[in-house]
Amino acid sequence: MSVAEIAARVRAGQSSAVSELESSLAAIESRNSELNVFLHVDEEGAYRAARAVDAAVGAGRDPGPLAGVTVALKDNMCTRGVPTTCSSRILEGWRPPYSATVVERLLGAGAVPVGKTNLDEFAMGSSTETSAFGPTRNPLDPSRVPGGSSGGSAAAVAAGMTAVSLGSDTGGSIRQPAALCGLVGVKPTYGLVSRYGLVAFASSLDQIGPFARSVADAAGVLEVIAGHDPLDSTSLPEPAPELVSHLDDGVAGRTVGLVAELLEGADADVVGAVRRAAEVLARAGARIEEISIPELHLGLSAYYLIAPAEASSNLARYDGVRYGLRVPGENVSEMNERTRTEGFGDEVKRRIMLGTYALSAGYYDAYYGQALKVRTRMIEAFGRAYERCDVLLGATAPSVAFALGAKTLDPLAMYLSDVFTIPTNLAGEAAISVPFGTGEAGLPIGVQLLGPGRSEARLLAAAAVLEGSR
Ligand code: GLN
Image 1 (cartoon, rainbow, N blue to C red):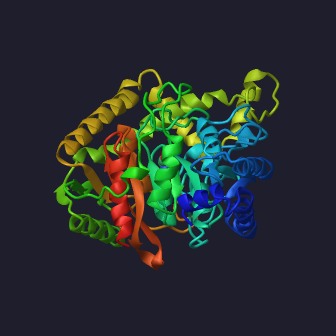
Image 2 (image 1 turned 45 degrees about the vertical axis):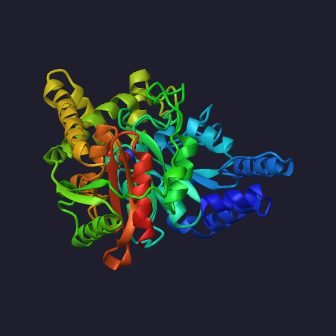
Image 3 (image 1 turned 30 degrees about the horizontal axis):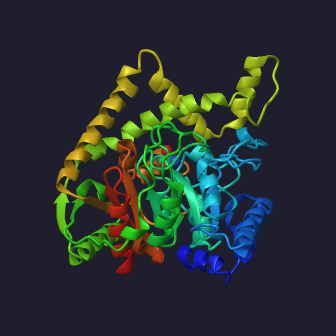
């Protein structure tokens, strides 16, 4: 059932938020031990939210556009009084004293947050295997990864545990797991969705967005969580855009750029799916232009300087004093060192070292400064592409879901999972992954549609054309 149908039935009293919640809890019960999707199920909070929705309906009040819709939250979004771990030992036992703006907005719209999902530690990874609490498995094939870092949120929706979920995307962590789990995933324009209460990884890149089983569901959730928030100084100063009312806009008269660099190195089944997607858009009235944006080759190296640099600064706050874990020592600096040594996993340590090095005196200009210049060049290159094209098209990920363990020993191979998604984050622009066809072993393939800042309505309409042709 779609999000709109669930909400309509709950609003009309034909279903109840409590019964929606109960089917969600039953689905979690049946597969969570196998798949390791939820780190924490907040039954108490979920029942409280669901009962409030049902009470509103009973009293003739409208609970909102997401009435009774169950939602899973990536465990890097703060939820008041509920453990928020970022899948790291270092946040063990920490319960935030406030909730993220997205959580408040979901509750305000009648949604029912069910719990917190597994992720790569501090959202650093592409497979959900760097979690301190073990990997999440792909519900479509449990021998494979769900993608990452928002793998738990993707798996929750793919396994039917919740109607929708939220993830965060710093370099691809919504779009890539969406592709690997056969879902729609949106990376909104930087600033469209408030980051207040999202635990920071790389603050100039992080954005929250939805996972959903359909384009319409994703649009419905994004409308609720988007819009200005005075608590986030980087929030765009405007209300949420209208998305649902534009879903049928189509692509007639649009120019779609099929980007060579967004296919390079992808498996043949993925390339084939993207080319078929271009044909579908052409049949729907779009003009397809094959284009090249060579600057995209620079994305991965710029990202792996900028993101770790910001992370090394953001993660300095985990000092054994302010949050979670504390491992005692003889003095403060020893306590600090032991806490961080035991609290952080290998990938997080690798990023902190990379970032600290890139920012250190003597190397700053050569690494971090240079990466910022590259970032500017990429923004300009996208700008030129969008003078000619309304939408860009490419692959989301180079392959379908890969086997657990396939890339854990080779960080560079893992980093390459995001080669097609990272450029959007560096530019601060919008992109969406939509399932389109299947590849190896019958697993889903995601194609990526990219647009300039604030182009979400246009991208969702184009994604709806692809969805409708399946
Ligand atoms: N896989 C990328 C990384 O490891 C992106 C992660 C993300 O978007 N959070 O940094």
